[in-house]
Length: 64
Image 1: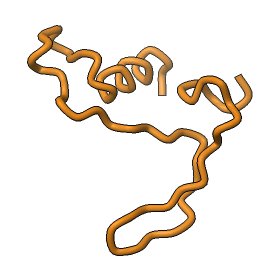
Image 2: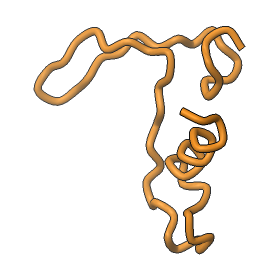
Image 3: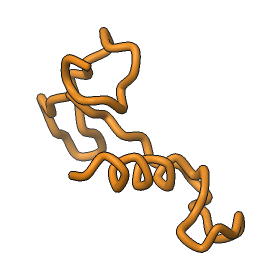
Image 4: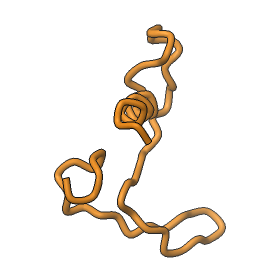
């Protein structure tokens, strides 16, 4: 994905804005994005992930 598009999508998912620029159009409940993570198990109500917590910025690619 192009970096600019990715940054915009993450920004919108965090509830920080909207394509229209109107605050009322932003999502009300932010979406958590777990990048560099792995799904390890599902059950009836939850998804269990192994998250990469060592990186300072979870919104950048792997080794950056």
